[in-house]
Image (cartoon, rainbow, N blue to C red):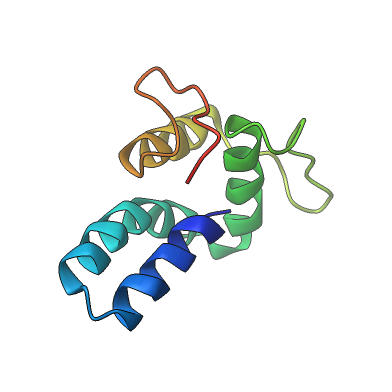
Length: 97
């Protein structure tokens, strides 16, 4: 999902560039907050929706007994991806993390 950001965070911490690490963490935090909110059972469904928005999956397939998450939650995910700089302000994929 955000492997590029996680790798950047690791490199910044390793280089002891804590200001840069904090800036990267500030981008990661909105995604963690939205993906791991309750109910936790939906975390993978949320990630799939994010991957669709980012152009990395064609659709978010959900297998029973899970159900597709509501549109309001999909909108929360979109806002988190915008806050993380993974989508532009119009919600379009930037294709880079």
